Image 1: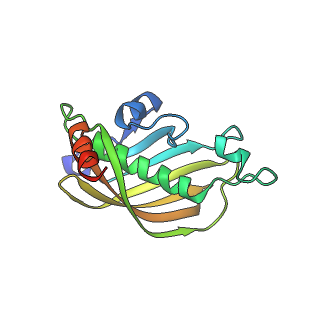
Image 2 (image 1 turned 90 degrees about the vertical axis):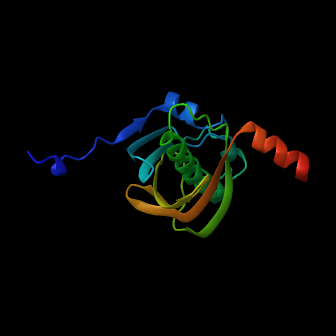
Length: 166
């Protein structure tokens, strides 16, 4: 068998690994699992949407719909986890700052019982700044899409920024 024909095994991050990769916690952690991780190039995040989500109490009680901004946040979290996952083991990113959203589009509502699959792929990376294109899909249909950018930072960077701008 030719070595060029052998594809590298794609990675997976269960919830315990996701918790190590991201600083987010309930109720703001919007990714349950990540699979098909291909280095820092692409991956798919998974979110099981349940009626117990706190935002459904007010958005909207008679017709619960997941807020679009939270769908985009889930895409960004998936991309952020991929960034951190691809770095050396000795690197400890403490914060992943969401820097921008471009070309966001919402195609269909996401409701309790849906499984969101966040498909993200790297557009580019310069130093600590990354840009990804993502699609959030339910049953193979695009529910939302956007380009998201993020910056990896440590606590010292965050404190310096806060003291300068706070």
